[in-house]
Length: 488
Image 1 (spheres, rainbow, N blue to C red):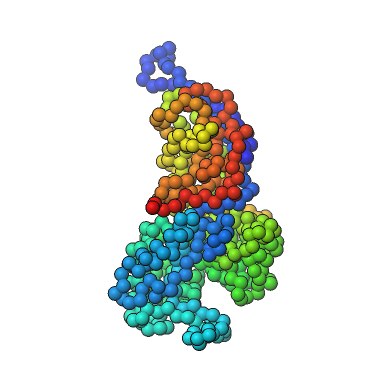
Image 2 (image 1 turned 45 degrees about the horizontal axis):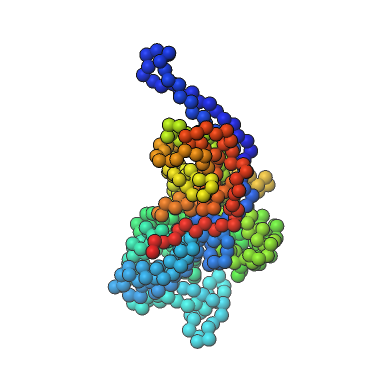
């Protein structure tokens, strides 16, 4: 938890005095401590396992596949249909602290015909599939290129942007629309359609991260990727192609581990349980995640949570997906007698990806008896989107060739109306919209509700013990922090 503690005495001499004898000396005791990373996995926003597995203890993201005609059946339909759909589908997840990744699609193929024989046979990559189709009633089924399609898709994306771009229920956007499952193949998008879609999504979603399926397309633009056959040997070229695009610092990398095709016995295993319980498969997935700076993965999230071996593998994968923030050292005012609290935090991202939205860093003074914050202040210097992980993963050493940097954030706060006493100084990261604790640092000196304890501070009194040792902490992995509850 905490490796050591030491105290620095800083002597501040007041300015403006003409003689040394008239100078007033003020003493500020600064306490510094170092910390160790927790070995546990835990749920954090906008990273890790992606649903639809709502039973998954780490799930804070859900992939929502949306048939076009569910949100628009005619050109005259307004944004109300999209809003109604979103309220119906998104709200139950959001009240559980889960954000959505919507993908609109037109064609959903299956390996067999349905009982009513209404699915449309389509051949792709030498395989005949039987597809359900979801074109609006006033559009031509199977048309991905006509002037009508181009105009309608631009207008649909604009409507989506009006509803989802500022919607806190939505984490990221998958472009979708073209081909089987909205995976932008069968057919592949033409150069003209690539331009239409790219420009439409850039305009509609200035505040959301947009992902595409295939690295070979949209090369004139910068998007993230949803690799929906993650880790399959047949798609090694996708790993290399995504690496070559080198967009991970500003673009999200997601997708799913497919279990319905390919050389699954080679990699990554034939089921989520096998992937997570077999060392060579788990190592392969972690290596791929680290190489690509992978933020989240779906399908594999449906593993058996009650199997201890599988669950242990899931915990390891969760730790290696997305960001993971560790506090290496903190310095802070050990006792406050002039209402000034100074704090400096040294943070490192030991995960695979950045976080793609700024979560405000908040300091709090917590009553050690009641556990309630008596004061809180938000850092003016911290920018979580700046906290980058390392790069150039080395599979042999399991380390980054370019190690992650340590980021220093320093702040000074003026306290108001804090009663004299001994308090716990803690930090958390706030939800950007609701300003509640939402994102946790990876430490076991943790208090329920999202707080990592840095140490003890005396307010209006001198204390000799600044260490948080001896405090009864909570299990960071035992809480799925749900602070994204919508206002009723």
